Amino acid sequence: MDFSMSGVTKELDILKQLFEKLSDTDKQAFLTSASSKEQVKKVIEQKKVTNCPHCQSTHFVKNGTKCNNQRYLCRDCKKSFVEQTGTILYNTQKDIEVWEKYIHCMIEKYPLRKCAEICEINLATAFTWRHKILDALQNMMNEVELDGIVQADETYSTISYKGHHKDFQLPRPAHKRGTRAGKRGISKEQVCVPCGIDLDGKSVAKISNLGKQSLKGLQKVLNGKVAKDSVFVTDSLRPYQKLSLDMNLSHIRIPRGKRAVGTFNIQTVNSYHSRLKNLIVHRFKGVATKYLNNYLVYHNFVNFAKDTLANKEAVLLDFIRKTMCTIKSADVAKRPAIPV
Image 1: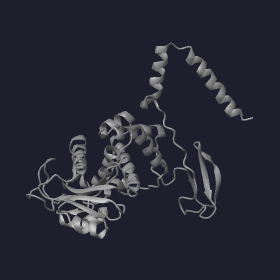
Image 2: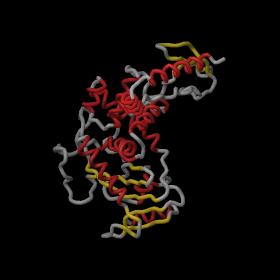
Image 3: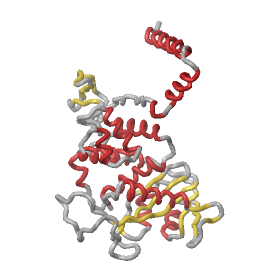
Image 4: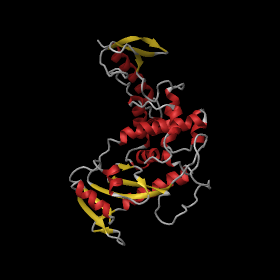
């Protein structure tokens, strides 16, 4: 007999008896509370250790515990490791409950100071955690493939050197946030960001180059990201036509001055751009160009992907527990000022 299942059955019987004793009003209140998304406890599967994170060998054994964490010893490279080795959570000084709070704050798009206050962590820690998580999320977005009706368009962002300049010298005079580029129109004072979306809530976006869009820049971001037999809908920019031929896609071009060709348009990707700029300019008060690719991934996952916020929290927490990402806190700010 399975005594564990027997115990669960008895507990359920007791709960049923207690529930039946409630008034109709109390029953309704209880059911409403239990079904509320905010009350649902996220159950995250424990990461299954399949190989050594140091040498990828599958020849390892258990090697005791430390701080309630199971340790393992690799028989080949002789190094020890735990479940979290090589992930964001390795060497963290905070409990997983704090990370759960922080991920909730990220999904709600709270600014860093509010995240730090809610999670009771330092502001610098809140900043580092955000970019460690977004660096890991890049791995998820690298697997995205757009299909069906795929809309593509580019947007531009003025180069920003926001942040501390302890080890960095500005290549131009400093100015206040929001100041327009010195040159009119599209220039190399701006980064070009090609974006592709489909109607199922999947999206890809990345900085491609400085200044005006080019075929090489489009290939860098969209090549290999659109499934065969998809319908590629763009504006009349010539490089899109060349890209569609390279990828052997059906191509619908929206002529200049028109909003649609039949039922095809690029309004969804235009809305994507609008929500992206609202996130960056209004919610986060501008971001440094060196972090822009991370905020593009942030926007893709939080703003554009089709799922409930509660499910996104669970997916993201599970993802960072299981995904290899070894970036160090000291390296977060050392990335190139313009990542092209």
